[in-house]
Length: 349
Image (cartoon, helix red, strand yellow):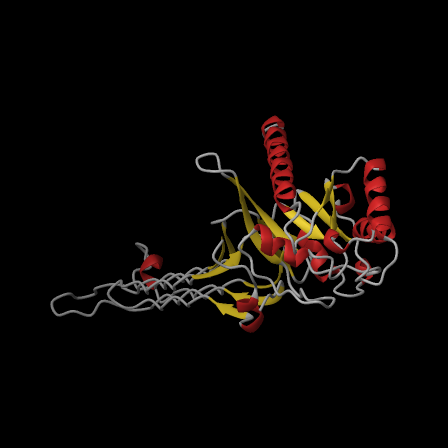
């Protein structure tokens, strides 16, 4: 089950109370204060990992508590510290404060770790309050309460390439042909109900390169307002470097104008915002084994006018698949290098 949103409540462990005690031993008159300190509570820590790809665990386990520190004891014995709780989240998770809406952290890389709820400090025992004039103190401190926070988690999948287009345009079939992904494929709209990720390899070792492709559930007119699967999955292509726009040029869809289909999807991307309309794009005419020649001709002319790379494929026969795969790989490589150059040129803060 793919779940990309969850709300959680975290509570760090309270600190243990300091102890009030006096040394009572044979042959040791007036032994003095010997109350130990309370142990610190356990933090609640969040860490990103590549081993998970959904927030399902948090949807069904919304509350997480750090362990309380043990109370101090006599003979200057301090209480044991509480154990930390480590919450593993998928890479690509955004952590928001549920009360203010503020973005707390973006887990964009593996093994990032932050404390999301700080533990309470243990209280001091009465041994710390002894002075030359106050040799039998009865003062001791209570442990401090652990921090308590409400968070909202939002997952945006990390992929180099996002496949977009109308439902049943052939996106799932394409990703199954160029990678080892096994998405559900059927001859009806909205077959894909969740993003599917596939790793595509091109070339041979030691010069082999790879990139990650995300198959996004089909869009329809009004998607940015919530129509169809709406904005539920549009955010998953915010982080992609390149969009591959599949347009069905057969008559199976029942729609008569492939160029209009293209414009509708581009309009939805622009309406959603977040820079989706400015992303580099490759236009792909799919299902060319059953193409309507007029649709194909108009779509090709439109791509030429807009100076967009254009490819014709048939995922059923395999025609054009290899050429498209290598073209995507080359474009992703160029975009990665551009990103690296920008990062190097950015001034250090």
